[in-house]
Image 1 (cartoon, rainbow, N blue to C red):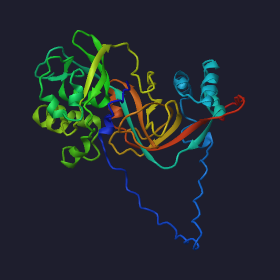
Image 2: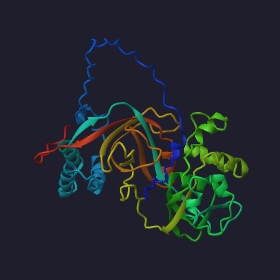
Image 3: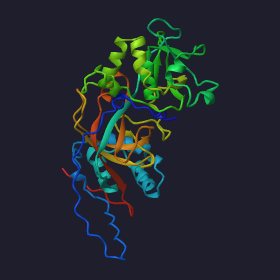
Image 4: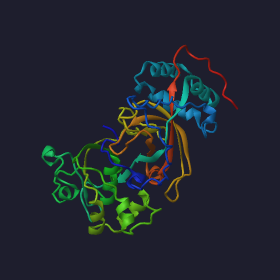
Length: 369
């Protein structure tokens, strides 16, 4: 099951901020067609093209890390051209930066996508847990209920939380369970040192609703300080009825299953572990799993965010709230540092699809200095 299968949004995705409004351009006047003559069809514009040297940040990218992530995941793509380029990658000994860059430049051609969208980020959280409840660890990690079909689409977060939890798998701080449900999976650590993975089992089939905008609109958080980190801190400081009321604005509820922690990265929708910083969740109605992109993201709206994200990524995951062609959710890894960073990512995004070159195997030319 995908790390993003619950369809919720992580960290900065809790920030359902509106895109910057743009002034519409007045279209030129249209000449009406002559009587009896059908209007001419608008010509279909050819795909945009670019060179690798046109990609901002390409020369400075970590091509070795990008190649390692691509080679480990390229088998996901099913097209014959993709399979051929994957074969070439797997036949290549571990390259240095210049050779890795030359491989991409010889085997792909950049195809910029029209328009701008939004980049957000997610991560695999790690949280403390208890086997019995107490005043601090009071929220049950619930398994998928036997009557899930009866609850589906009917019982919201408040109704489920009001029921006893005799079969609880573990107990967590309420705000951390909320974030675990937003992420869809994570690692729980018990006082004796045991670590287990909490994996998505099911949800209640009600729509996800972000809580950042309501918190901003109510004056609970500043408009530029609605990161995941800020939201979590506010909920922790007001643990109890006040925080519960805010979390219950999101009616979606997620159930889990526990498995031993194998130390590997979580598995995305493609069924393989996600390479941190080089894998994204996308809208699968727009893109196929295994598609390769160059992302160029800038102009963050949240305080403390990194200014840019420019790197090669592979589409390996999806999420119910990831919609549209120029929309990506970047996987940043696991643990607290990844969580802080993910919670600040909401950047203006441009995407460039890297299309495999077909035909005979190209000769790898040295990378441009």
